[in-house]
Length: 120
Image 1 (cartoon, rainbow, N blue to C red):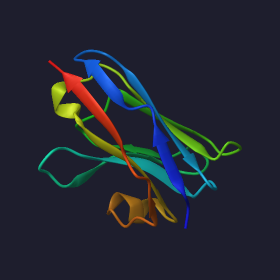
Image 2 (cartoon, rainbow, N blue to C red):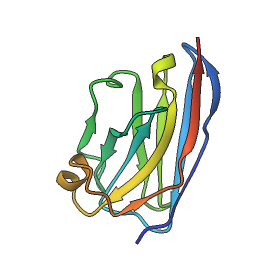
Image 3 (cartoon, rainbow, N blue to C red):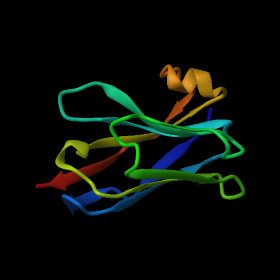
Image 4 (cartoon, rainbow, N blue to C red):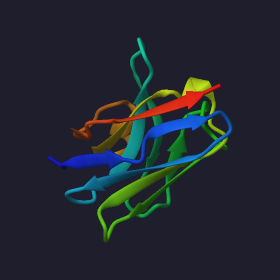
C-alpha cells in the first residue's frame, strides 16, 4: 500500500489559484485526485497514468486544472486555476494499479486529505 501525504490546500478567493502536492512512498501506475464537499460523497476529479500519457478529467474541472507527476520524486501535483466556491472540498490524493479501476473509484491507497476553501 502506498503512503500518501497531501499539502498545499488553503483559503483562496474566487478566481484564484492553488497548487496541491501529494508525496507518495512510491509511484503507482495511476495517481489522481478526488474531492469531497461538505455533506456530499467523494467524487473523482482527475487522474494520470505512469507515463503521463493518459489523463482523465471530470467535466466539472476540465479546462481549469492541470495534473502532473514526477515519478523520480514519487509525487503528483494538481494546479487549480479560476477557482469557484463550488470547488470548496477536501481534496484526496489516490492511487490505483489500473486507470480503469481508478475511474470507477476502486482505489488502493488514499491520502488524509487537504482542505481547499474558495470564498466568493
